[in-house]
Length: 278
Image (cartoon, rainbow, N blue to C red; front, side, top):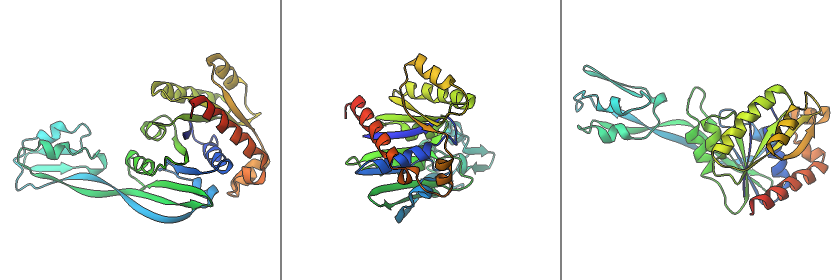
């Protein structure tokens, strides 16, 4: 089963839940797809034994062959290539690597070269198989790295995906194909607002989901009222706890120091597994 963990906003405890779930199960693979700011390793402390670069193809124009017809520029939806009189400019950071410009060029003046945008790292933390991506600072496109991280999915294991926060393309790329998504929220107006956006996104791509309320006991009850009205199951409440916060600040998963919570995460997993029929 592939179980993704997402949230409408950052800082809700998404990584805490993903790591807690992974440590509570057996035969697990944990993928950190929050490639702009990966932090699973801070809690999990994996031993990395493989690192590889992630490259995307970008156009290179041979202006000796180019007749400046402009067809490549007209084709590119992302303005990554611009044709002017006697000059062609490319913008690699805008290029999505589709290769269309080289195909459409009537003079075969466009070839492609690789450009490194980040890394994928693999390793183990005890019995947990681990992989994460790291996007280079300043690079705008996270999706190619997320896809490379997800290419490591081991279908013989239970896969936990720690998705980026929000509802943008990187989140959709991360959660797409999951059997279920755990939405981590907090009982505050901001938490409810962003939870609604994430639920709309998951309903659009038809992925089953349930809610985990972190920092329960602060804020108000509007998240609970909304979930009740919408028939959305609240799978777990993690209380607002100084001890949990202190452990997190020291890079210690709270389930390791409070093992009773492993039973809670295992119960969630068994419930989700039964629901999705795996």
